[in-house]
Length: 168
Ligand SMILES: [Zn+2]
Image (cartoon, helix red, strand yellow):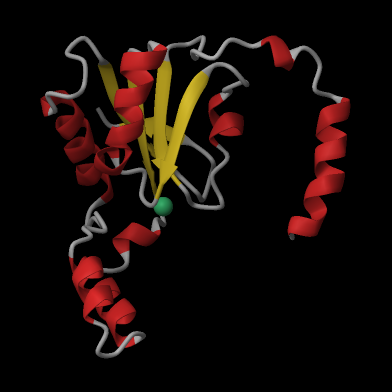
């Protein structure tokens, strides 16, 4: 796969245009938090262009996991709106943190360092899609590290149709 990078990048550079003059702070003052799922192309399905927004991706589109980047984005780069996207068919609906900890520990039998490190990670899985969106929006509203004036919305993206719907 990585052998394709050079050719793909040459094509991209040929059409790069004037994007080299874009400003560092996102023009739309927007953060999108969404899942790392390979089927999601947020720039395409939300119409986000280079320079518009910070798109923070992680397993599940977890707001909690994104907090470090959100603080940097808001305090240093001026963003004031956050849109949280979770999606149908998400892998985060399919396991528990204890399941995953067991997989890692069983692959490293007797390794106390691995056990203690993996036991300290909350993998932030969820059991219900819409509720998880509401919980993440609530987390952002309540976090003292997120600016009070932030406009926060919560959404579901449907991998079956490409459609989005607003939950909060
Ligand atoms: Zn996902």
